[in-house]
Amino acid sequence: MNADLTNLLYLVTIVTFVLALRFLSSPKRARQGNLLGAAGMLLAIAVTLAQDGLENFSWIAVAMAIGAVVGVVGARSVKMTAMPQMVALFNGVGGGAVALIALAEFHNLAREAGGLAGEESVSILLSALIGSISFSGSLVAFAKLQELLSGRPIVYPRQQYVNGAILLVALTLGIAIIAGAEGDALVVGLILAAAVFGVLFVLPIGGADMPVVISLLNAFTGLAASAAGFLLHNNVLIVAGALVGASGTLLTLLMGRAMNRSIANVLFGAFGSVQASSGGAAAEMDGRTVRSTSPEDLAIMLSYARRVVFVPGYGLAVAQAQHDVRALAELLEAKGVGVLYGIHPVAGRMPGHMNVLLAEANVPYDQLKEMDEINPELAQTDVVVILGANDVVNPAARTDPSSPIYGMPIIEADRSANVVVVKRSLSPGFAGIDNPLFYDPKTSMLFADAKQALESVALAVKKL
Amino acid sequence: MDSLLVFELTILVLSIFLGIEVISKVPTMLHTPLMSGTNAIHGIVLVGAILVAGRGGGDTLTRVVGFCAVVLATANVVGGFVVTDRMLEMFKIREPRKPDS
Image (cartoon, rainbow over all chains, first blue to last red; front, side):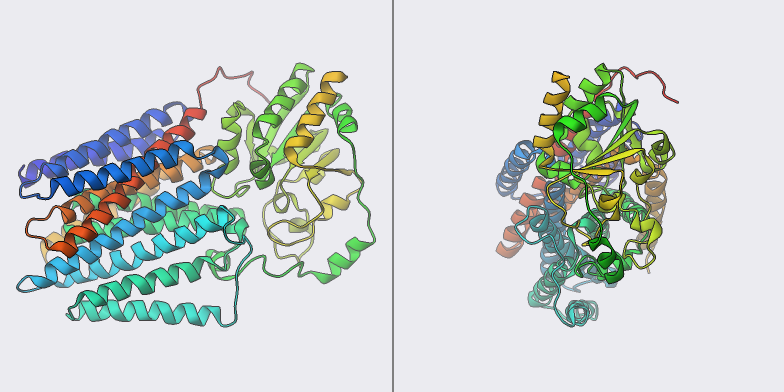
């Protein structure tokens, strides 16, 4: 197949990718868009396999078969609640593939007479570096989300200096490559140093900040793919990588804004490692009491309300209670209660996590309200039920300038007539900050696992 | 700097702008499928992995490394699209309820 025809067909693939993203602007056509993107991908793979001079088909076929089985089994068997870690994992393997491509290309080109051209060595540096960071960083994010590692930030003294030194090692090796030094050990060393950096880079980032990290690593893999495109002079890699890079960067900034924190603070702040930094506020809490309630009382309160707003958080995902909340909501709607859901942009462990969970439970998506939409409604709401969320409803973000989350936009649950918090205990959220909402006189606490609590409330509503 | 590099840089920069335009129209509700969908799209590195693994005259090291790259990239592509499809399947089209205030 000649180069012009190849590039024309790659252009078709590029168009399908852009349309796939375009169709994501509404839930109606999003699924078709994804299938279109997959078709475009298939075309690109077929075109690539039809290149002149390609050898080794049996190896490639075996490798693709292994990868496809792993991909399908992994993607099919994963529970919806485990989506964030699955996305992290698939992101990581993409980054790893780029790093390996860089290694193989370097090995190939360096053997040839004339060796590497200048821009090729720069591309090798970038794809090896970014790809490898993305690979190991994503694996750590996966381990944190899967709770193989503690979700809390892991810190040690002089962390930033150690990380900086390792990155410097990687860059030095890269510069040696650009300067014309040859030898596979250079690239292998670069990839290993970058991998160590990726691990150390994600370790100190807390679980609540995972939406930012996952978006950022997604952007990294995209940029690594672009760099590989420069290395192989392949347009489809450059464009697809740039699209992903733009998307990941945009989401990263969006998540940072939703938490009112700079990206640097998220990445290097080891947020949540210090327990309740505002000592004064915590001491003040000690004098206060919480009011607890029973499923039966809650059932009565909800049944006679005009409007109920559920605010889900990561606890809902952990308890896998998304179907139970929908079941309860339907019982209430049958009694004429208006039900809405207030979704904070950073609730959960990845951007839009709660929307996917509730969609899985068949919650109509017009009932899902974003923070800015739901906040003006809350003053006219009878009951807000908080399900496994904490920091995103913490009024300290509005009132306590000494709080670490001061200034973060929150769902203003405290404006409603009654607040019910379903939570296993009084322990603080991932940010490690006490929540004055729990001590508010109009708040009652239902200490239970979200799933059990919702089941018993639903039972009590049926008996009324 | 040769003209090919300039051409490729042009493509890169324009693609980034295109990406920002398209992505900024995606509603918050679909951000998880967006992440997962872009995740599948960067699986396009499979094209690069195949080219490297199948390069004529490659030695054993190239082939082994290329083989691993193809495995990883295929897992990325297949897993990415399947997960995204599973997510989007849940955003089924329903009759819109009464328009609220």
